[in-house]
Amino acid sequence: MDIVNAIYTKCDYTTLYPKIVKKIHNFKNEKLLLFIDPYGYKEIQPEHLNFFLTGGKTEIILFLPISHMYRFADKSLSGEEFHGGIPLKEFLTPLLNSNNDLRNSKSSEDFIDNLKIAFREYFKKQGIFVDTFTIKRDDRNMFCLFFFTSNALGFEKMLEAKWKLDEQRGKGFRFDSQQGSLFSEVETTDYTSKLENYIKSNVSRTNSEIYLYGLNEGFLPKHTNQIFRDWQKNKSTFKVYLLDGSEARKNSFYILYKNYVRNPEKIVNFKFV
Image 1: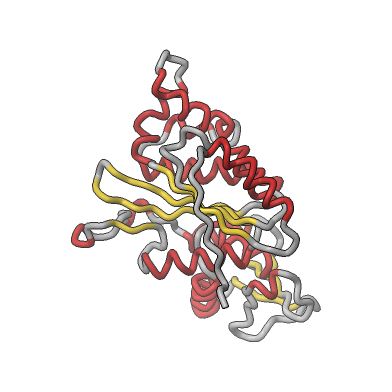
Image 2: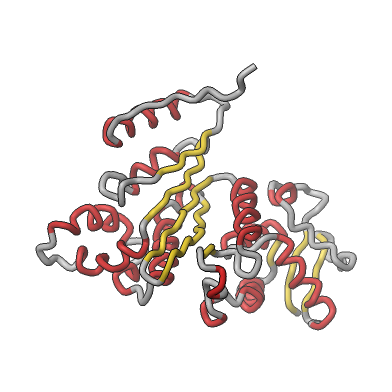
């Protein structure tokens, strides 16, 4: 028995877009993954992604030609007469209020980070997770897959796939494997320090909060658990408490999706004392 029904069509995006939105809204319990590879970015708009994601039934992988966008972003948004930059201006303008650094990016990698931040702010009220995976052909050709989902577990699975492809950084892939890592040590995120500052920024942090924080920083629960194990060995000020105020057993961190969705028996608080 067939379990996949493949339907082939050929039509413009402007014709296809409203049909897809209508189909998504008619779904009941079905889930949908959209892979969008626009011809550049000439027709797709951020608000289209918003309509696709409404209702939490859809996850999106959006492919964008980052090198081209980065080269022409500032000129397209400058107000100068630049006819070829109109589609890029229309794509980026709705995101500017979320991150004005888009115009001041220093490199293609920086542009990716700023665009990710802008998307996260743009979809903040909808609770959408956003992450990226970079594909670099050479110094002049960089592309990026942007992933959007409202499901924390789906987001975690996407991060797992990224880390399998890039075991050192979990960020990207380059075709010439002889050239070393895609990102230099200077460009990597100091997740350990950020995590410590995040915990210290409040009286304490729950395992649910830590779970989400790690994912949004691009790291899996296993990375956070390793940091916590190191801290328990080397930082006497790092403590883990149960809800009744007593200290939790060693390595009892419970940073898992099933505990993120509130398992009352597996809630702990992390703090520095």
